[in-house]
Image 1: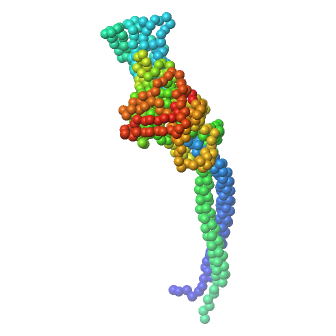
Image 2: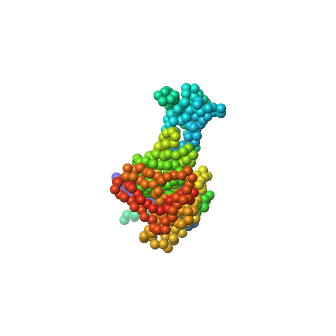
Image 3: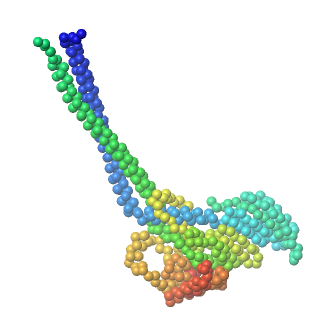
Length: 193
Length: 317
């Protein structure tokens, strides 16, 4: 059955609810606006700070650029010098730098004090590579000097200068005159720093 | 008659609040929009900041590079560069083997012959060749101590085979180098005291007396000089009259050609001149006339017979 009366109490309640809701919304919106304002100001501050930093860096960059511009040619020269120097150093590593090794190898057959030429040994042939591997042929005048040579090769002084040393063999050649040939190969210790 | 009662308070409240809230919403929306735009702006500024910072760091590296070489004067840097360019030129031909060998033999008094080019090519940075040498012990030791730089071309020995008979016969595998460095600004550079020692040693020992070597010129000065001169044609001028000013390096300056006192046969053998144990300044015969160089291109390997007349560079010249 349809009512013919208006419930004034209910209407009032609705008005109160809507009014309260509006007030809450207004309050929340105002807070959001306030928050956004704070964020916006902070952002502006941050942006200004970054911009200031960029400006500082730009000024620094300009200063550096002037320096670099003034030293452009010398910088190019420096780079070229560096590259050429590095190339030179790299290339020198491939060089055998034979002089000190030659002294060492000759030192093996150097005459001890009081020795005579008859019991001496000489280096007949040396093959030497950039990796310090070497093949040496010694020649001794007689058997005694040949044994002396072997003793010198086996001495700690000689062995200390080699990474590896192998005596391959001794050949006696008595066709023309007594000759003992001793073949050795090894790898000298690298003297290049 | 039916009475209807209208709640004005409700309507008024609804209408007034609604507009006010809508206004606040619009403000909030714009503020939000500004914030978003600001954030975007800040992000881009940050990127810009990082990019600028990286540029600064790169520039600082470049400045540090210049600073790290402050231990050498700019003139000295240019001087070392010139020296290294002479030692290791940017390009070369097989023909220079002949000049270098001739110079090497002359300056070390160690007789060199029978050169054979083993490996070379247009794109190769090296020219490798074998050569035989003869001399006494003293000459050989002098050769061993000086072969690298004495010709003012870098020479290295890869292998050596010494045959000890009455005279020392040596067969060697030598290499000449060319190198064309590129300039990269990101290249890290440094120079140590050891490097300086090496460069200083080479310069002091082998380059001091060369008039071609001009250590005091800066690139700007060279450019000015080039502008002042006529670069179009290369004039072959007579060599200096004074033996003290004779150039040491054969191929350093196109206007000054060295003498070849030996002769190369088509088979590639080099017959050097008679070598005296001591440097003989008598070999220097300054010719007032322009230098004539004839290269017979009958052999494809570039080891053709060569007749060249000029001043003979000598050791200690």
